[in-house]
Length: 467
Image (spheres, rainbow, N blue to C red):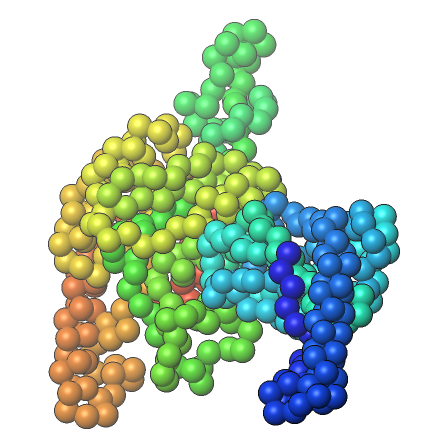
């Protein structure tokens, strides 16, 4: 506990100590005696008030949850339970020391009128997480005035509360809402279901046109008549998202301040400044992973998550359910870009060994670097025959055809920038054509369309039974 002077003491010091000190120095006889008496009384009352008030906060305890979960950019209410086992405290002021990753929402200092002896008081302290990741609360401070209001008694509580801040998916879910709205059958058409499925359904009598491969010869022998096996289309498949968090995942995505939506906390990072708000490609990858996990759960599929850089560091088997979604979310919320080159060969070997059942692999990988794309192309044959692979990345800022509507130069230097962007676009197009020969689709959507495009590809594959 630490005592500090209250405002009343400062006023009394100005009204008593200054005249008393002046009288002691410059007066003789009665004036000096009155000055000494005033100084003695002031010091006596201050010391007595300090002694009798030291125990006011000694038996006051504060309890906070050991684990708090919040969403980036959204209010996080922290419950604080004050337990008073000593004398009544009235009033009690409290405040929390937080790091730069948080912003206090609402009053910086809270006030409780009274905490009676032997009672508990629960209050909420609201903060706003500004960054995704794992953090810890630092300390909680409380203070109360002394009995005669001359001092403020303060006490510090060291905290051990962990705060897990997850990405905010509100805006991405709004963009995906239109994919799940059924507004009649206008413009719909029948899509042929590729394949006949592998799940056995029932036995029935042979009908003209049935494939001889589907005849069940044991049942035919028992019934003395041709019997055919029928199959149903598989409804549950495995979907894995493979996220690359190597050096290229740290590529910045800039959004003009005027174009950013007010409730989009994806771009409200400390790195933002000037005319643009800045985030990274990895943030988009993680948003896309969580959104696809939610969509796969609604579709009844099993969802898994894999992250890698120079090696595979997170591997979560495909499952379903809310608990599994929380496991995936806890696995990816601390991912940060790593300053190493991706090792695709080690990734493909790990996938070949661990994934025995055919699955859909949605790989979020940046292939804008020609050398990285070449290494990926060389390692891909290890898995592309067994699994269905989709590759998606965020389109680089200037990667457009030279004479497109989005490359209108404003200056001479802009012409050269657009020319460099054209070469980058052409290299990505050639990479896409090479991957297409291996049966792999390369998507290069805009940063705000990454989740929508990925989910659309998944739903189309699900509808056509390509897995």
